[in-house]
View 1 (spheres, rainbow over the protein chains, first blue to last red):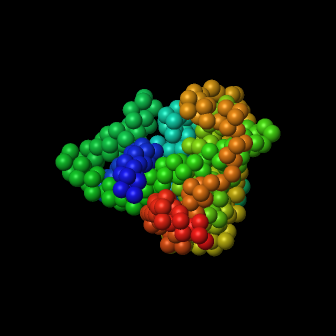
View 2: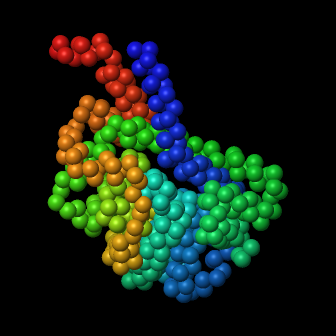
View 3: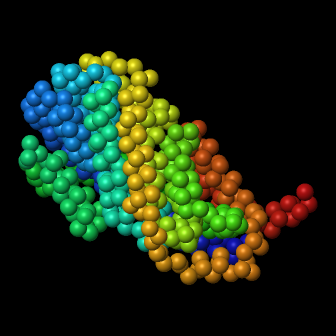
Length: 170
Length: 288
């Protein structure tokens, strides 16, 4: 039994090493992304960016939609969460959408899509870090070139186009 | 607007990541740039940065525990059985594998809200298969990201319910009342966009076979015809691993804590393995 225990302890060292190898980097990236997001929030940089938009849209529905989605893309890439982007954008963009004449459904489509944009393809979001953690288990899958760039191109471009279509037809 | 810290630091993050700097450093540098552009001093920036890291401490701990749990499961040999089962099918179809993965990812955000927790456990053992079928892993990454993302945009279950609740709540709070039940209707068109993106990725962009190196031990294990189909039955250790997975899942769902779920999985697995290897217990087991 004593021998068995020694083997067990030796195994546990190896198991922890393997586990950290699999998920340690993604865990630390989540921590660092959170620190980065805090800087963006505490310096009011996000609010300033969103507010800077209000003067630029004029009365055009299309330009408002494009700018809103673009800001959504930037903010989500910065703070790494779609869920956190929605409240930040809603404060400025809901009144703006009303002023330009978007109805509630179109506004919901815009705010939702703006939040979603940038999550796929962001190097620090769990929608990309998760897939990499599994696919790179043997070290043959690059996070940036094999997860982020493909998902950025294939999801953000359609979301952008379909988001604008939704805003215009709803 | 052009001197906004968000704009500048996201551009810095993207350029650094694309030019091959590891995302860990790219993020740190982007954070420092953001702080400096916003007129913070270097020390202030670093201290806010470090203070903010705590915001994700639960996620970080749960991911590390999850990794350890996945490593334990890998040791149990459960994965080998899964692979042998898959090998015993006539010829596994590339597309059915890709879309199965997308569907599992969809489930992980809705009916079984484990989020990405299934990936480090399920995907590494399947890599052998993906390599054999020469599936471009970029197609698999696209399928997984689709599954992690599309459901919460459109389907009001699990994370989707939370996301759509936030949209309805924030819109109403800012002067445009909307019922939460209307959000899926609003998000249907953007969700269709995600389907289009997935189809383009799988059937056009990453359709071509891509070669990956098969690790030596894998080939040894599975391609030897003598061992094939020999041990495709669940042995004791794999049963224990299965029990541990369900225990972890149960705790994670009932207490909605991935940390407690992973801890449960790890302890159940270790305890049962330890117990089942003790001689006295073996004797007892035989007597029963």
